[in-house]
Length: 466
Image (tube, rainbow, N blue to C red; front, side, top):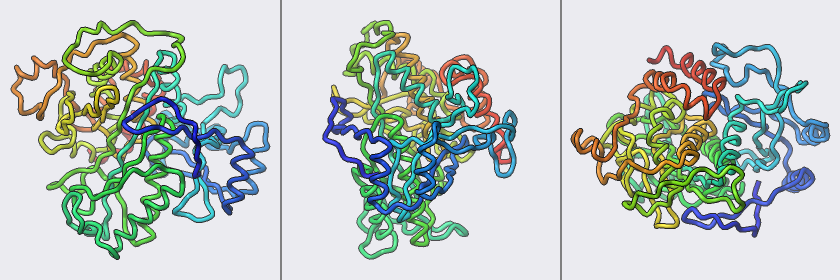
């Protein structure tokens, strides 16, 4: 929903961040009625990154909100559905209560009369349990990481790049044009795709998304939508809404929008780079971490940023199954094609590395390039932030040195001198194996039950593709 506020906070991520106003139940209902909303889409995203939803007439939704615990019942199988089957470890017995998060409400510019919002998976029957939260819920998973960061005195701002390709045919595959990067002929006035892109831009802005720009990317028919930074949970809600907007409006114009990692083997892939900045909390942390030794004088990063980056790079192979979760994802994991490379390394404004440091001192942020649009962004971001916080929690110093080229162009001795020793898995099967071999670290961050069930779902989904 288009929400405006003049309540600014002091966080920075290259642009000023305006904190959305908190809306109560009555505020939301009033705004929905004022905008002529007839239906509510209560959405969730499963482990295979399928967005699912129930459509609820607004009058029924209002009644639902009056219940002591508002929500709808969903089968406990809901996160592990593969086609018409279930992944091992999931059962059709029992139900969750899926409770709406009113703060995530947005008007669907692509569906007049509809509004959408996300929710939380909770246990229906709490009994003697200490919490209603379901640890398998992707949104609770990310919220838990956010909460841990605050305990350590760290807050985040996050921004996603949304890359996609517009196809006018899928059989055979045919893009809307073959124009190069940022070329004017990629958006010729009056063309179907130019009209489509402008309607996408209008719909996003009318829904309260801060659209910074959109432009043609490098591959045939490829475009990118860039939106402003937000706190992590809101950023993921926004990128999912952005994708829904793109797909639906493209379909209206007879086009197919795809986030497939590499449509053209001879051209650039399609990613979902995430930009992350770290900021000390305004209040004193309840569990302050040990201090970074502060011995690295080669970079303008803060000790907090260096601790975070060191842990990200050390554990980057363990994030791959969550950030690159499909067989096709590994068509992008190559050297020398300005994607992310195959080594766990970083550089300043270097697009041949897994993590790019950008922004001036005092406004640094990290661009994590090892993520694509097939990943559930709640899970992907939880793995990245959670493993990065391991470095903060332990006061790690940055030992991996920056490079200004692709790591593959350095010989083994040069890489070792720079501390570049870890490499990304090259297949999805290898990515799962990395997590199983490093089960303790990732389980401590994301939870053992979640990791086991996520791997089970991922393996069943792609067993026939590998």
